[in-house]
Length: 575
Image (cartoon, rainbow, N blue to C red):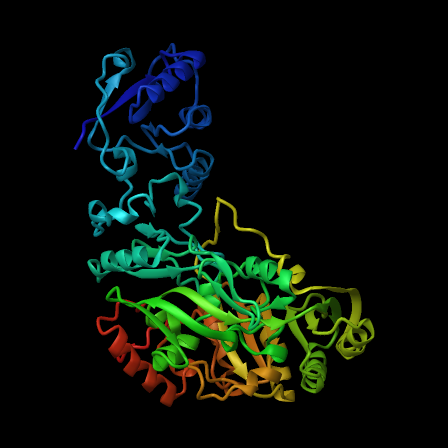
């Protein structure tokens, strides 16, 4: 390995202009590190704070790492850690709290005498390599992925470490661009059988299982092509890394749409292998009901296609439990014709949430299948609950839209409303784009899920009580029925076809949420994995009825006998 060199800059001996000139010179010469020395015992010091200076120098240079010899001054360890994190964000991960081993640090006077040599094949300095996690053979990354990996010390790591809701710190992120590169990534993962393995398309999943701590993540966000294969049959091929916002925008050119949940920032891969309950589901079915073929790379690297005639058993399993069998590299969907729709956002205030839930349940039960309205509520404030209703009426006729929505508006005191005719792409466009800074989820999301066969008076009573506990800050009812039930329960691994609603609750305290939610267990029949974070084994049996789970386990043994894919609701015999 080539020798790496750094220079030491004294905050006491060098003025601001000289510090900047030396830092720029070190970077221009290709040195690997700048070390700021505080020299706080020097009476002639310039009084420069090392952390402020590091942030300033990082802003005036492009890539050279900057090391500081001690932690920031802070009244607590937590505040010190926050200061380090904040500076890491400002400096793109280039500021270190100590000089990494293996770097030869010379005084600034030697800057022009150092003989700079070539770096290792990845171009990563010792400062970057110092942040590597134990147990990962970084030097053995396949050559095809050498330029498509993100390590903890890389500038782009902060934007990829976390998901929409969950904080993470994986040891290595692999970003394949082709099915062959996915196979190479899985080959590398097989050499690390004891590490967690996350699969990520958009990183929006509430479960947060597409990141981890110290493990591997295969991120397929670069595989995001959208292609119309056959305009006559509305056949579309979509990469797993595309977002539903991007898909909707492309299909809107043809007056088409694919039902895709309720948020355009979600990645295609996760939703298209879990189910997909959305604003068009009652009219056109779940997302997986529009899926006609999928291409995957199996755990052993085999590339395979599955549809209704080829590998039918795998096609069945992918539609509901797809994360257990392989990495999807392409989906083929048959889009639906969708023109203008009514889009409603209603804000209600209810002094009696129990009564409002009963009324909402009755109105939703009687609604035509062209109408889908979701309900969101939080804990009551001063005896009143704010209810948000979000709904789509699949009709371009304003009179029909008003007729369909009026009963929903009467389930509380209408405080605010916005109802427009728009395109489905316009609804999905409300999602924010995920820029280069990525997701910044923190901590561990805590969400519980259930399928509600019927919204009874007893459920309305218990749901209102749940929100009064203060353990739930987000409560949602997703309107099901209609076309969802047109597909038989045997057709896909997603077998919960007849509930009236899917229910989600999110809280901040795991034990408190579990205790409050478990009191409602008798109302539910099954759960939706996309909104579930409870790791208890019983949840797997809630998600899949016994006959479905037995069939999935048989498929698991056939397609992933070594259980490489075990970190996202693993269906193995010992799960």
